Every structure is written in structure tokens, then in C-alpha cells.
Image (cartoon, rainbow, N blue to C red; front, side, top):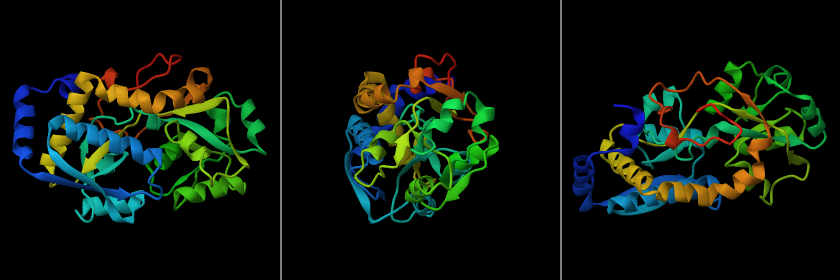
Length: 294
């Protein structure tokens, strides 16, 4: 069966079985508590998760973990089936080996569309960049445990790695690296933060793209929860509520970033798992100036 058929055309029997078996229980779902509860990186996945669960008609509670949990720790805790029972994260082969992925890209692949946070003192240096070869002369900063880091390294970049997300901004401000590649779904929210330095700015002309997806992940011992969430997501795709939430959340941001006018530099993603539904075009976003599918 083709991926698009698997993703958006579940049989009535599968939907009935998943929903019927789960109706009686209260599903207690615990996710990693973020540093900032108002961060859009948390708000949208939670809204989408709530939408999916409501589509199935189950009773559920959705609560953060007792303590703040950064991504690396969250993934380890989920693998060990401790404290939390769901994570949303960019996929790679190792994460799909350790955890159970729900292979519907939550943000339609926007996690792989990257623009650059740079220091205002070297912003003009990027105006001379036209291709990957010239961009390779610049040093990106990225997290030690992020799949993005491995992707950048595989494409030849000399990556400055940091243990935490906030450290990356400090590195750019202090001149330790040239740019911090941020997903188009992250960058505007970050720049509007009160803690964002006046010396950091958004580069205007470039973007990089690599095919990847952000998924919900659960523990491998919890396939019923995975089927429940996947069923709800598929129902939301079929009735248009998934796309409605996506556009309501990101349309203004996409307009502001203006990918259609940027020079897009494509990178390879050797970490892309083979079961990624890249042929299901309805699951992916592409700006008007990009003809190739993810």
C-alpha cells in the first residue's frame, strides 16, 4: 500500500477497533515540561495532539512532567518508560529504533526549512553566498544531541556544538559561530522573546532545506496509544481540521519569513528513515518557488 493510502485512508474497522477499545479508559498522557509553557514549539504539538484525541472521542488528561525536561533527557526517559509517555521530536533512524514513531509529520516538514539567526555585525557576509559551497565556509552552531547536527556534518559543515538550546544564541552573540539554523516554525517566536539579544538578527536572503519530519513518539511497549493518536490524526487529515490548525498557526509566520523570495540551498539528509512517507505530498509543505517534492 502506498504511503498516502496508509496515512489518510484507514479502514472503518481499524478506526472502530482503536476507538472502541479505548473509550472506557481515561488516557493520562504526560509530555516533557518545556522551559517556557508559552513557547509555540509546545503550543502547536499540544493543540494537534488534543485535536487528534478529541477526534477519537476518548477521555484524556494532558499534563506536563513534574520537572522541566530538555529533549535529550526526554527521549531517554521515554525510552525507559519513565515520567512521560509521549514526545514530539525530529525523527532519525536511531530515534525510530529506540521509540515507536507515529509517521505523520506534525508540521508538514517545516522542521527541515531553516533560516539563520546571525550576529548583526556579520549579517552582510551572507549577502555574498549563492550556493552550498560558499555557505560551507561559514560555521553553524547546533545542539550536541540534535539530528540537525549530524545532517550538517554529513553535508560538510564544521559545526560548533553546544549542550543546550540557549547556549547556541550565546555562541552567535559572542562570535563563536556564524549562524544558528532555525526552523521557520521556531524562529519568529524566538526573536520575539524578551530574552532575545538586540545583537542577533534574522538573515534576509538564504534558507537551507533538508527533508525531515517531526513526529509524535511513544514507548515501544505502548502500541495502543500510538494507534489511538495515529487514528485521530488521520481523521483530522481527512476532515481538513489538521490543515486548518496548521495554517492558522503558521500562515502568518510563513508570510513573514517569505521563503518564496529566498535562495534555497538543499542539503542531503542521510539520517532520513526509509519509512518516512515522502511520497505522500498532502503531508508536506513546499513554498511556491520549490518544484521538487520533499
